[in-house]
Image 1 (cartoon, rainbow over the protein chains, first blue to last red):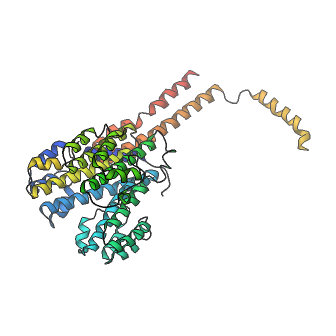
Image 2 (image 1 turned 90 degrees about the horizontal axis):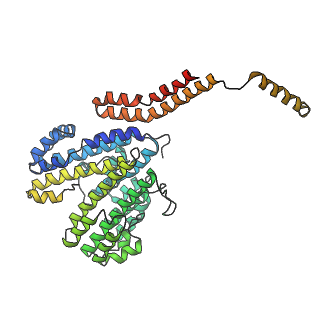
Image 3 (image 1 turned 90 degrees about the vertical axis):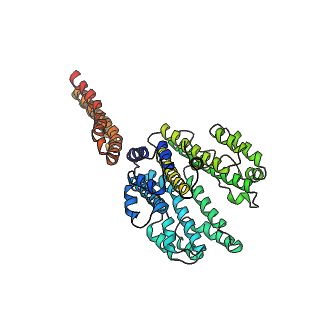
Length: 355
Length: 87
């Protein structure tokens, strides 16, 4: 926990400026019509100039785009941590831990599949709290258990330890990955919200909590829909993340069995019902879960935008930037990959999250 | 000892007050008003200045707008200065 005054004005001004230089929706339409090398050239003339130039000698085509995107993302998010101070730093760092979770997951998966450590490294996004030295050491270990030992000073140690026993029994990585996810989401609301009854009712803090709850709810909804769709025989309780408002644990376990009831439950919720009505309609008549997940992403993004204009000098603007940047990176990646495998323009467009 | 002297001390203190008049004359109050206004302006500029520096770091063209925005609360002090001429 860092001390001292926070500097939301400074961070906000910088973040809003960067937010403005993200690709617009028209740019995506242009990109859809380009091939991988044209996309790389387009990126070279924008924000991504430095990354493309640095990596251009080593990679080409879609790989170049992908690594440049990852590196640019890491750079921007690391900047956020550099600028911010005090409580603001805590709130941002806490949210950016999702990249730590991603990195640890990737490394564990890499160890599991015995991938070369250099190859794992290219997939990491160095934007979280774990420093390079720790990541380097994690990349060197050969056993998952040693990797967990390596994390013994972080918040992930205890949950991973517990999950490791389950992993040893079943041999499935899901247990470890869930443990990481849950640890991340449950830390998000720590010490801002002390339970559903004594949360702040208004002010920036309340909006921050509202946003995080929305994110947790959407995550739960997504997991529940996936489980219901796939009909996999997994215990929904082990996927449940606490802190959301949409489901409680028993509700979730009951609803996963009944797909229509689950969709109704989400649509009836008064906080999200209206916001997601378009997406719910699509979910009901099409069977594309991907479309719905994109709609959830778009809804979350819009939600973050509204919150950031209600309280201009709060952390909400930073969160909305983080989401928007991630969306940009994912969209460009989807376009590049889509072009590579020769998808139709309309098919690629369906893969994008556009507001 | 001190207790015995208490009433006399109070007498002296009260007389002294009568002799010197009010603690704060009009001019003094006006000066205080300007000072407080300057403090308020400084506080307002703190946030704006931080934001302006942030914007300038991202985009050099923001220098002039940033500068103007930063000194806007300075009008508070100028308005408060009017009080000095009135009293």
